[in-house]
Length: 231
Image (cartoon, rainbow, N blue to C red; front, side, top):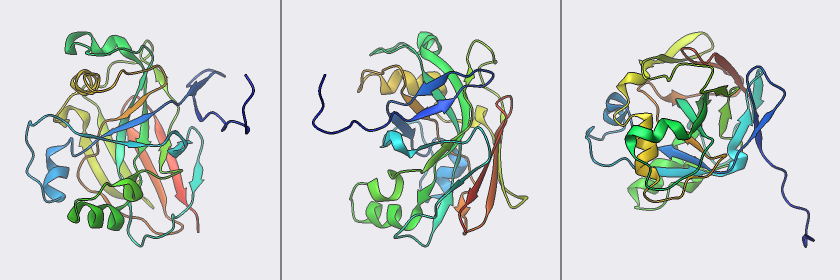
């Protein structure tokens, strides 16, 4: 095939214990999926159907080794959100909840970095969140661990520190919508494809980072990531 211009480079993530790379297709993010975080964002937690927003594939940053990300433009309120990331290995639509885990290729630790001021301004005006959430280099993600090699993280501590100070601390068992439920619901609206990622939501404690800050994020059983905001 002859392209009119050179195609964009494929974004990929490291695979734990392997030289293989996982190509990133789309990034779906679940909004307000921990009750305490919903409350801190001024919303009541409930069991209404989950809602999703997206990040571009080039939001993903390989954070399998300590990495530095830029402080983005047009914001003075750059927030961290630690999350469990799910990588899809087998596509499908209208996936039943009880077979959803069959579609999971692996799991990782990730950050949904957010221009909070832009997000809230857009929300209050009834506009899309794109400039607040969906920008390049806004999703540092650690090495992916194959589902076949790790236990399904239905109960696992999730935490984030900034410069050694505890910011976020919870457990993925507190997800309002489980991984399987998120996959099943999302697949009713989009045909999931191999390479898709699902960022499953963040617990309470989100807050701003400044230039030079060092974030350390972890999910029990999936290791840690170290992400520095460029000075």
